[in-house]
Amino acid sequence: MTDLTLSRRFSATILSASEAALFNDCTLGGSLTLFEKGKLSCSYSPFEFVNSHARIVLVGITPGRRQATDALIAYRRSMQKALDEETALAVAKSTASFAGAMRSNLIRMFDHVGLHTHLQIPSCADLFGSAQTLVHYTSALRNPVFVDGANYSGQPKITAVPELQEMVRRTFFDEIRKVSSALWVPLGASAELALQMAVDVDLLNRNAVLTGFPHASGANAERIAYFLGIKQRKALSSKTNPDIIDRRKDGLMRALAQMAGSQQPA
Image (tube, rainbow, N blue to C red; front, side, top):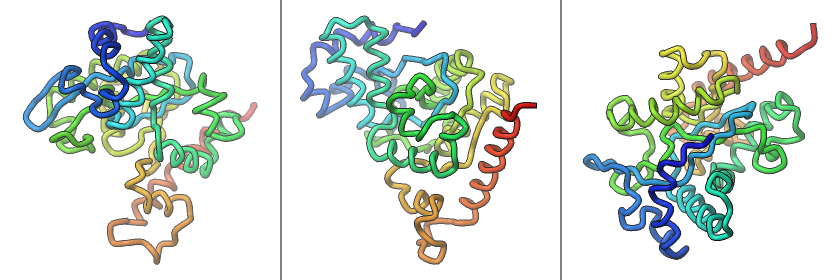
């Protein structure tokens, strides 16, 4: 069952707001704020739904403003249609998770390494469509975190802020318990850090974590292009270290090959 505590706490506020207000400010002037500490703030957005039957889990760092806004609007529309709360949360999650450029980048990277073959689907695009039952979308920090109003991008580190650590241990760890048998794919260093926290307390097997993908943000376009073989090493800017990308991709490909071998009939 999905934990409905926060959605019930904020449902009336979201329903009473206009779509224009949500579009302009996904915090509704701070009325959806969960906590503030110095430059850090965290705001509610409806990302509670957990697909406990998933075979693969995609883990981001935290929803950004675009994702938070999309989730709030989808949730509001579903509740206005008199859908039950859990269904509204599921719709919000599938609508907003990794929305925008991130989604297309993920699909390209996943198909490039053959993850769709591992999942026995034509393309990983289906994870956002006809094969949604196979995937759970989540973030290390379930609710959107901001630094001076901008999307949190990993600094300060999760482990340096008690409130962020508590978010990981309370909500993220709870999701791991519900989907422990799935393959977990972290997208970025902060997602990897959160999964390592789970491995360190024996909540998750290290072999269930597939690392090596560049972060799917549109701001990471050059690293993604190199990962995909679209941009050559000699054309890279000084901001991109191809050796790191090559090393992580090699490890990822070895892990996928091992998984493919373990799936072969005896």
